[in-house]
Image 1 (cartoon, rainbow, N blue to C red):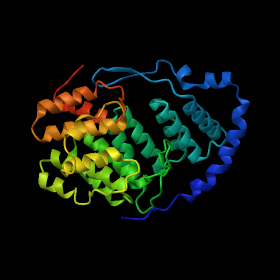
Image 2 (image 1 turned 45 degrees about the vertical axis):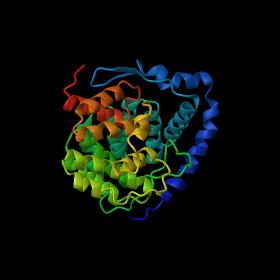
Image 3 (image 1 turned 90 degrees about the vertical axis):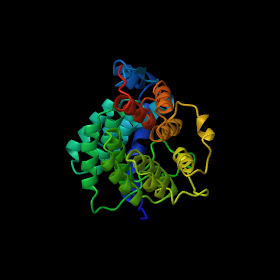
Amino acid sequence: MKRIAVNRYWLLKKVRPVLLAIILLPLSSCRDRKQENPAATAGPRTFTTPLGKEFQLPEPSEKMLDLYQTAKVTYGSNPEDIDALIWYGRRTAYLGEYERAIAIYSEGIKKFPKNARLYRHRGHRYISLRHFDKAIADLEKASRLIRGTENEIEPDGLPNALNIPVSTLHGNIWYHLGLAYYLKHDYQKALAAYQKCREVGDNDDNLVSSTHWLYMIQRRLGNPERADTQLDSITANLKIIENHSYYTLCKFYKDMLPIDSLQTVKIGSPSADAIVYGLANWYFYNDDKERSEALMERLVESTSWSSFGYIAAETDLLHYFEKTH
């Protein structure tokens, strides 16, 4: 596995804009901040899934709004700073405002058309909104732009418990590209992307996230022996910081955990949804379509409509079980 260089440019450039934002932010009254709250100005905060399920977007917390406002002020003070623009887009997306985030990234692409990070983030949010073809176009573009470039750590917007970033720019591009192809049921292209994702991985979190998808894809392709070879690096003592759900699934695939350890997981968070979808998929390729469908139906009754497990279950219900709304 390759060693990854920290983006020193990002570290150095981050300080001045953030200090300016901290100085300027208190000048806005609470009333002004409320007027700038996307929840108050963006109209109906709802999303309707392809299965016809309508969800009200949750009201953002004060902390999330503060982080959003800081990012907005920072970008407003530094409109030519690509890092400020990306954080403005990311903080907007964390509020559930995916269309607005996409618009911000699109604005950035006009300014910086050869920056892979913008296509990576916009592609991710196209997945959130089920625009898979647009996501693939962006992420394929990003994969071309990173050819011959040094990989870099991608700073976390929602840090893990240890506040240690575990993902990289290259890894996230290949991961989301593989996911977009998987959601289109193009398993050969999904397989190729996740193989690239594994190649650029540098830690155990990267290993289990790519292995989970590689295993499932090989099973979907009808290659159980090849799927099993993907698990060769999975052991009981991997050091996982963030991707515990993927690690749990990989150990289950390798018969290191019993099935009942997965059956008690409660749906409703991205990590839980990943496990439930992994189990539903296991039933699917082991010819228990009835249990698979039931679990997927249960999954799409949850409120975490933008989690990858939810979206994967949704696309399977539409594609394989011919569900409609």
